[in-house]
Image (cartoon, rainbow, N blue to C red):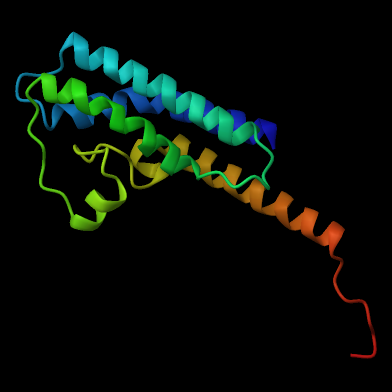
Length: 149
């Protein structure tokens, strides 16, 4: 499980900065600024921290999923974009309600938004987590072996 988690963290770490620079450029008329670049670095660091926490915590602990953790980190880019004069896009009301801190709608909706590598790592980590969860449940609650049924 640890190796799959490390792969996910590594894939996101490699993809998140270019993703955020590209997404930020869609709302910035004057191009990126040093402040926005610094904020992107902070978001990447926070996303990494949140994903490490998730992937190193026992699977039975109720934590949010990896995409939600990435989206959570992205919200902290808002002040830098506001200061750089970015234009806030119109947002779907449901998205705005679910992710109020991501006012620029920068957070990825799927692993593939970030990269194919993130997609593969995310799906693999999720499958490994589900498998381990199932194995634990079978070990503590074996299937009914009553042959009279």
